[in-house]
Length: 290
Ligand SMILES: [Zn+2]
Image 1 (tube, helix red, strand yellow):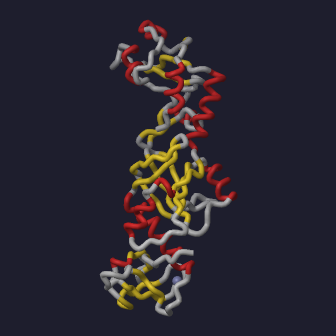
Image 2: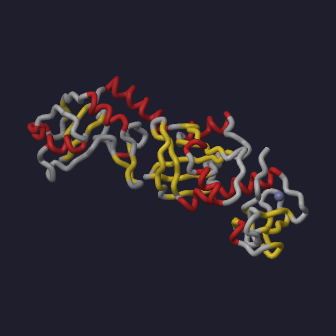
Image 3: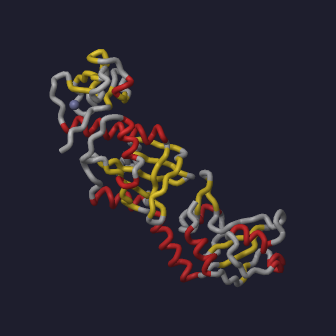
């Protein structure tokens, strides 16, 4: 086991504090989060690593692991930048909100982040990896999760920990809800095809064509997506009044994929009709997620 310095402690006010934020020695007035023992701040030197030590002289591995775990979470909350799985790959996003130790009922993720209205989890591995039971619960909640492995490494400063947290080599996708979503969409599309409908002056594209029902029905649909925290229907809805040229509108939306569509469709207001989506369009439709 590598030595890990205690870089984080709890002050008298109960706040988590970093070694360089407190006075030197016993003056720091800090305690160990793990064992509750009194800590001494060793942050005067220029050569030695700044760290906390137990006043009793007895620094246990558990105490340093707990301190590292707290520091890692605090850094993520501070940066509000989270790594999330997207179709088998890890991407970095700026989070709208980051919450630490938020209870989801049966699990408490280390980091619970909201990115574009969607929930994500980050687990910090210092001593215990996610077990089967927790994995099952994560899947039940359908929250994409990555694990960042900080075990077996030595960290001498907050910057060290920050670098490790931002290094994709330390990351593992635990559960990717986006992949699950795409798979379910593929299956539905295979069964239903992609249908199109003009409705209330807008265009609706939906495999089940359920979009004429109130939006809340779509919330359980795998084609539903959220934008800016408000729910969007599964299909694209565009005001025809503003953009009368459907062909142009579609080409813009579907990123210049060729769409077989007739401007005459406008006269079929409030009725759906056959529409053959190209494979490229179907792919674009399946993979969109936010
Ligand atoms: Zn301790």
